[in-house]
Amino acid sequence: MDTVNEIMDWVTANGDVEASSRLRMKVLPHALKENPPIMLQALQPNTKGSPEFMRTLRQLASEIVGKPVPATANQ
Amino acid sequence: MPRPRSASTAEPAKAAVQGVRTLDCAHKLRIRYLLPTPVEASFLDRFPDCEVELQRFSQFVVGAKDQFTVRCEQLWRVAGVIGNNELTATFGKPHGAAEAEELVAAFEATLGEVFGPVETVVRD
Amino acid sequence: MTTQTNEFSIPAVLDAAHRQVTVGTEPMIFHCHHYNTFLQRTIQDADYIDSRGFLIGAAAEVAFNQMMHCFAEAGLNDVPARKAMAEQIYRWAGFGRIDLGPLDENGGTTSTPNSHYSMAWKLKFGSNDTAVDLFTSGWLAGALAAIYDQPLGSYQVEQTACTAKGDLESAFQLRSGEANYPVFLSVGGGRLTEHQLVTPPANNVDYDGIFSALTSMEIVGNDEGLIPAFGVYLTRHYANYYNRISFEFERKMTELFAAEGVSVAKPLLVEAGHVCAFNTFGGIMMSPEWDGLIKPTLKNDEDWVHGMTAAVNALGWGRWQIQELKKDDATFVLHDDYEGVGYEAMYGKTDHDVAYLAAGAAAGIMDLVYVGDIQNRPTLDHAFYNRLFKSADSFKVETISARSQGDATTTLRVYR
Image 1: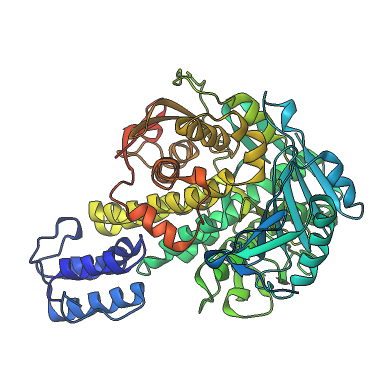
Image 2: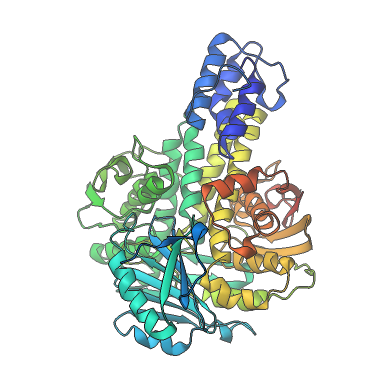
């Protein structure tokens, strides 16, 4: 999963009702530190962050959902 | 004591009182009993050693029915409505469903005397 | 209206005209353990803001104000009597049991095996790495200051053990000195208005009769200081506590992240309202109390919505009315909603609606009746919750007017 949207969609599908909102809450400061900042309320289908940001996003997503984020969108 | 049957494989019920077992949010055993006849106020006299609370709702709203709660030493609690065919009981302590069986047996003995044989199933 | 517990009568004052109950000038409202823990976790999820401070400070605020007024009204001047009354209020409200005996004017340590927050956290989320009962920590600091006629903020507090962490008891250490939390001054009941009632659509629900019946019930802490009712553990909590922690959280998110901060916080604050509605309202609508008091007069789905709304009026949240109601669309009119009243009193007018709990709760009522088929007694478990609130059929909320923005009422349109 390469894009922010793909990970958000995975969290929505696999997590509790509040999972994607919790992820946004936790990742917000990291998103706004990106250059350019990633506005979580205005994600585009191909929005990506730096490798470090994407690692943080995946880690937080896994913690919230309770299982690892898969490598590809089809898993 | 016979183990409760699973609701999904139940044979046609023969018992007068049907109970469905679940757990409440504190993981206490909760059983909802469906009765063959409505509960009368005299049922509450069966629990002289317990705390009985009667909410006289019929005095507040036209058409409402009085609701009761019987609490016994913080070990079990049963609630229902005078004139309805249901009781909801919780037994024992949180995560103590296994230890609650003695309490269930004692309560269902009383229930059986009033309403007939009791059979409970586990909700899948 | 007073409620008798052991030695003291809890001086609860029912203001029926405004659907509010106060004790020692603090508005008291019912909320369940699901809401209490979900809200706290939401706030603490934002680990980049210092929420520990205001989660404690808000509790100190309300406890201090309430105890000061209660002691004065009862003419209590000696310390043992003050401690006894404070302990009784804590238990009556469903927070657990607390022993103030080991504490003196310099502080001390007290512990309890019965704490609502610690018990609730374990039930809802399992064990935690850190202590969770920040509410009781603050409550003790505020109550102790009132007991010893000290200014609010005279005691530092630390929770040194927590049953949610696996300890046998929850323990709290207090020490005389500068507060290790922000000091807030309580706003009490806020500015209440004369309600200009709307005419609801025709229904079979006796709103006033239900209000009278429910407010006459003794829903108070048991021997453990807990209130198991309607399938949840209720607390008779402080409106100003919820308001302070919710709005301090929102304000800090705004300070750090401006509009992005609010847009991220709001869905979770509203979701907390869904959690409350699902568990508490769902439990109410399947309870023997509902079966006796409300269900006998209900004739259709719309009556179920009216019946639950009538019950909400007894929670201390303000007066709730329904102005319009169809299966896909409803308009709820809230007079003196506790969130709007509280925000105005604490911070003045805002540029957006802050009735987050109300929005989630109103949507929750509609979801339970029209999507969840609560009439047929579904099992209120986690899976059902997710199905209900993830459903494409679930309801959304639009704010039509907001007390916090200076309007006369908070009016919410709930639609799908």
